[in-house]
Image (cartoon, rainbow, N blue to C red; front, side, top):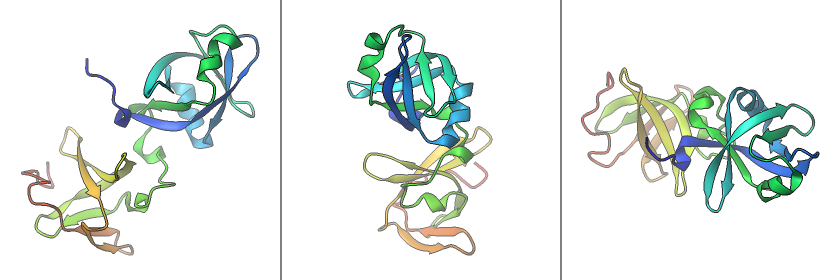
Length: 182
């Protein structure tokens, strides 16, 4: 089993204060993530620089939403999770649900990516934020393998919004031997 990386998670909001005698937590979560929070078995809370998985006992869609994690049974036990980033597994949140808000190049989702030398590379399925830059995610081949392309202003030659195309001057070898068909 491979280690979980931050790229495997989608940050959906933050934990708030504890609520009630059971150690539940109030949440500050974007509304469109709530259905995915209801459907998943685990939530990830950032502690000591990394995200820790916790089994979900229940979720209440109140205002604000509340989350009870199975391991905590009192407000005192849950106190260390107050005001922490909250995430779900990326695989539990469909690509189409991920927001582009706050991303400089988020609008490029569903654009066709072309390389000056490579020609058509593929369709941008998602734009992800990484620590140093945003990346275009292309799903390639029958196995839907991810190909990450850095979105940097020095690499972008032209953005054709009406035709939903982006032309890039990519470093040689970045795309490799992959073809449009995978």
